[in-house]
Length: 150
Image (cartoon, rainbow, N blue to C red; front, side, top):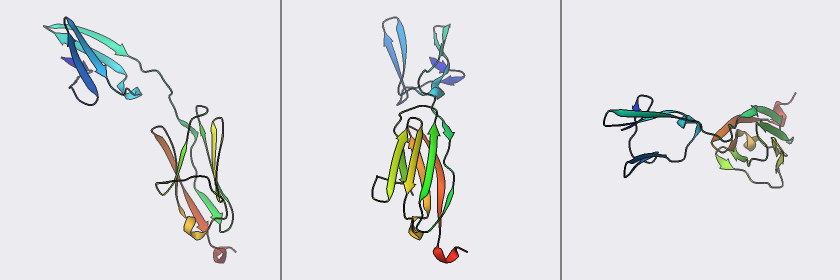
């Protein structure tokens, strides 16, 4: 029987349990930082424990997205900064992937990633999301109409 802490591990998408002669093998599929901890195997009242440390990129947003209020016809500027360099970021407008175009500019400079939406219209009011691996940050784009400008 394999356990992580007090949880009994079962075969499934996450874990494979392999018996190879006298060896009992635990396979952890698609490991993440959440998998760190102490794992134990118990057979015939004998128990052994090992600690798993997952290495890799502990990615985080140093600067998350901020809401932007922009006057109609101007440029909205969204910027994030990551803890690691040269990682691909996907930008979304209301869950639809954004691609560079005449009015959408996407740039990267090491840890800094920038999205510019030029010549915004009232229809551009939306939620903006930046996603990298399994992390994301969100901000709102609010466009103020010309009639609302004082």
